[in-house]
Image (tube, rainbow, N blue to C red; front, side):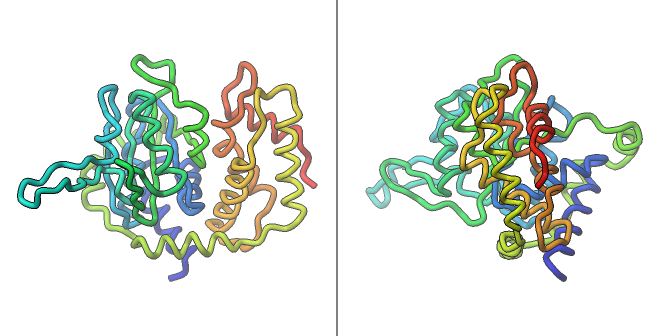
Length: 303
């Protein structure tokens, strides 16, 4: 079975649990194939946590969930050394961060100190605890969920933290047909318990490597650079897109084209992933990030 066919099976299995959300699921898989971390922002109860669990299971990845709360400490996430009386030495007990998929559930309910414990892990795939640097498993993903910032008891993620997420997506409410199937069908948790993986971790690495080879024409790079340049020069944005954001757009566009079974990136691929990649990086006065992305797309012509 080819890598593309395998990912089609992955998408179909996720869609059997998360009903009526084909586009957000496609973006979530694009993010993971591109090797990035995923932020899912929406109201409580729309399936954010379930989506993260389903993705980890069908991709055959080791999964740990951490419920972020205001009293969660960095050591609860990273691990701590405890004195072992039998050996007379301190022994390090790794925290849940040492897993292939870490679900940071309601990440913006933790304090900024605990949120910042994720920075090194997300950027460098390693953590430094008590002066010793320890590598994290490969592949390694953080899938974080967060509630809208206007809800009680939230600590907004700083820009440096948001920038570590390759994409931010929203699920929204299901349509009437999907919600009816959800109400009358089998409980999602029971379906999840019996869900078989489609891939193993090594398969996903091969998929990522293949996606990274998708061809990008010079004209497409011109279009990408024009989008970045406009975001930096336009007075409508508080701050323009960084070089890291440009790399994120390119990786995501390659992964999106790969999942569509193509060997070359089209402008439509870049436009499709643009809201998810720049929506949490751009700030358009008086408008949410997705509208900032649409504004950017409408003001830069395709070569």
